[in-house]
View 1 (cartoon, one colour):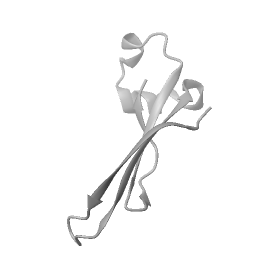
View 2 (cartoon, rainbow, N blue to C red):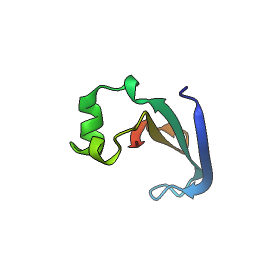
View 3 (cartoon, helix red, strand yellow):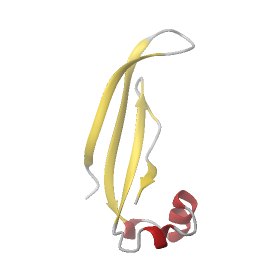
Length: 77
């Protein structure tokens, strides 16, 4: 269950070269069990479980800027 659930694309121009390209933002959902607690604390703070006590999934986000994949990052619980 880690396929992309949403994305958006837009045209963008590089600030240094002026080359036009596409910025794509993607989101996916993974179960919390796929992460260790240290990573979750680092991303959401030490009290994240008190704000989301029944959370079972984590949303990740990644940017692909003009063909360069910036990798998945934890986004929300």
